[in-house]
Image (cartoon, rainbow, N blue to C red):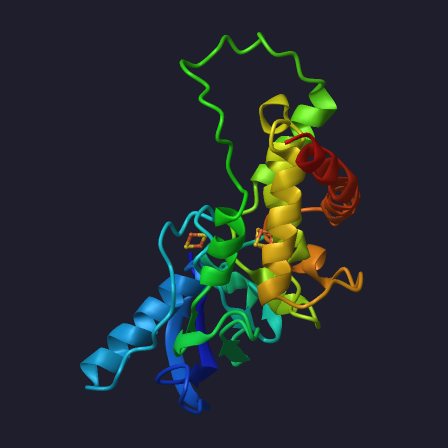
Length: 257
Ligand code: SF4
Ligand code: FES
């Protein structure tokens, strides 16, 4: 049987990127502890609408921990108090009756606020557009075992591919750096044979684009702690190694053209 919670929410409200924001205090009553955090916000919004008030704008899509859109700072923690859990998979049993819960959008210069709790993460798209793809025409799907890949390498590529592009790493970083995200997007291609043809042009282009929008990494490690998919900061080391190598490899390629 579910337990019912009564919570005091401090919710960030802001009409747009150019306007000032403020916290609204909203009571959330009769919240079942087996609801997800987003279901709790659904209930709050239904009540606000019934009272003729404006509902809270927040981002969500899959509600299954896949799409990365449900990006909330909850009591100062990206995605809230549960480790390796996106906001949509966070359950209200992680909170206690009578608790005050502060809900904010990601705070990062590269992610301007659209409205209330929703931010614009298009800067991530610019990084992926600059190199997060393979241009080789691969034809039909080859047999799975045609290109042998060592198991630890395949596992590492799959671990990197788990990144859902939520932006928690940027929001948690004191520098607003996007190195964890970018390194995951570089690694899931650069580790595999199919990614080798563009390995060094990819890393150079994606890191250079990242630096146009985001702050610099100074190895705080907050990103790894905040990541709902447990992406390891080891991928940042791999990206840095490939980036340094690209400064020699890419020069060699230019001299041959
Ligand atoms: S690295 Fe983790 S925290 Fe950063 S965007 Fe990817 S899933 Fe989100
Ligand atoms: S809504 Fe898709 S990851 Fe949370």
